Image 1 (cartoon, rainbow, N blue to C red):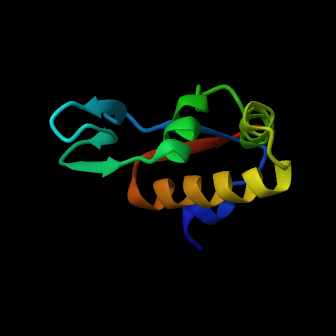
Image 2 (image 1 turned 180 degrees about the horizontal axis):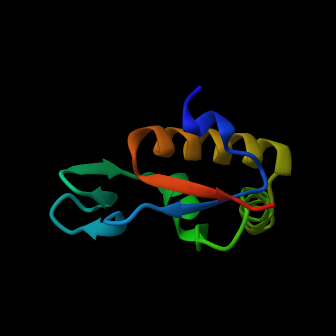
Length: 99
């Protein structure tokens, strides 16, 4: 089982050391930068990364985004968890247990 599969709504996600979000002026897009790799982000990805503060749980992030975008918690929740699991597998995000 990969570490990403143990992510729960009570987990607290964080960007791993050396990872940062930055606007790439040349390509005119926002990216996640990590040592020797870059990942382009769309509007949804940017909103999720901006909500990661190293203190909020996945559930808190989901509720914040659902309120901000007037969307259903379940739909936002599924998207956030899938996105975070992908970033964990790619080595951009880590997490701790919130409980």
